[in-house]
Image (tube, rainbow, N blue to C red):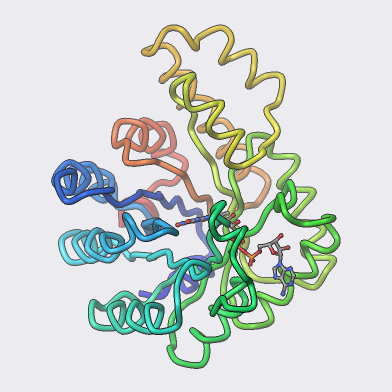
Length: 295
Ligand code: FAD
């Protein structure tokens, strides 16, 4: 099923993101965790892609396993900046062969080696180039990334949104945001996107922070703003793992309820291979999502 058809239904939806194993020996534990999340029957699940190789070969294996066993629509991430054309072409063929028709088309982060290499030799410099290729060669449903707090390499939000519009015009069906901990940043961003003529569905990305160690990494990777309410929660409960987990689930649930209450129908949760966290959020929201979640 195409994810855009799910997003266009007039009902609330929740989707979960998982990541593939880094090595063969952890495939089994990832399989078990992702299957437990799939058993919750989310609207769809996404599987990330390791930009510099590494986990990339397992993205499709995880996606196919869940699709075949649980019939949950799957979104496979694909990054292009560290790949050549032949590799990307092979990944596209692999997706088709495995019945994966939804792709999150990304550039990928610039590693220090990439930063120092000759850009004129790269086959792909921006996600828009991958999106154009996918649009020409497939009928995949295409998602792309966006940044309520501005992509770190962008000189300004205006420029970032202008580049985002180019991606959408190239054929993106929907957008998912970088993690946000303050919904007001998302609402403000959405308003600016609509003003810029970007009309596709935009899914806020919610990251449940359930242990204090995640905080620093989350800020480093995303540059996300931590509201005072959030920092107070980490200060108070960060040293007590069980309390922090419960508080993190409650905070994410609260954000999602606020989003639904304000008319945002589709929310994406960075569930990070943590079935207990996904289950906690699911349990908290089951009466709100009602049958739409369980169908
Ligand atoms: P782009 O859209 O190419 O944008 C990158 C930068 O270039 C931006 O500053 C943009 O404004 C600018 N830009 C875009 N086009 C042009 C142009 N034509 N000329 C000049 N400037 C331009 N990383 C992974 O490795 N694996 C994953 O699975 C993964 N999943 C992600 C999922 C989501 C929802 C998000 C938000 C991010 C994800 N990332 C993932 C991280 C992502 O790869 C990085 O944020 C990366 O730095 C940018 O990727 P992009 O696709 O947004 O790039």
